[in-house]
Length: 270
Image 1 (cartoon, rainbow, N blue to C red):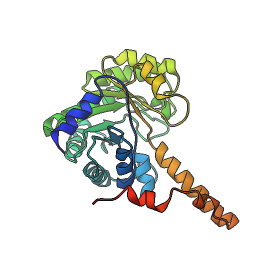
Image 2: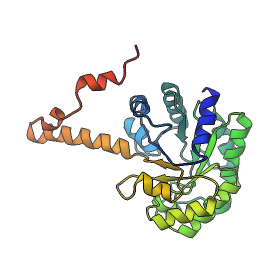
Image 3: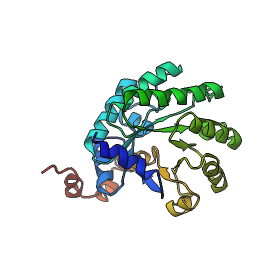
Image 4: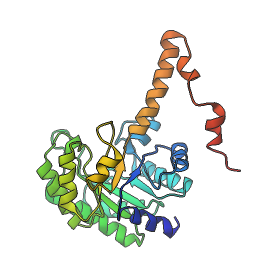
């Protein structure tokens, strides 16, 4: 990836507030770029669904290939949703982060969720070491990739604001460039996170109509993503149209779709 995309991505995090929407394949990435978004972020759920799998059920090789495909299809910076770095031990996290940095993405994220419903978050000390290892892996690669560290408590059944802030502050100290706690919705909670990790930028996930860009910008949020929400919106239109055909034998919803010529025009290469 051209060096200016790494620099542009870091600059986006230095001031103001920007939306980084989440495409799930090359086509959706190219359309989002044409709509004027300054950067894009992959979505593990959206990509998994496009492959007929559940979220967190793809391989590291599939994820890396997806990063390469998206990053090479657009000219704007791309952040890679790298889930838990597909590793448990910090040493393995470092190796995998270096592999991911080589795909052409400008940013990578790492989560602290275990995938175990009974014990959903990695122990605090291990979580911090995993973030530190992620930073080291990126640095050793020599590629200036921005690292986002995520604390997943609010989406895995452990909505403890104090614990979330404790983790994010520690992740910032361990080398994370951007902090992210998906699932936060209360403006007071978001403001508390922004204040706690300042001056590091904060990403907020918006998957519904509970806030707006101006409201989050006023709280000091630098980056807004939508996760799998755009993919869900696309699946909603598809399923509703298909269900009408299957159940009613009518075609109202497909008749309301964007015209063929408009969709086809998004992908012209001449």
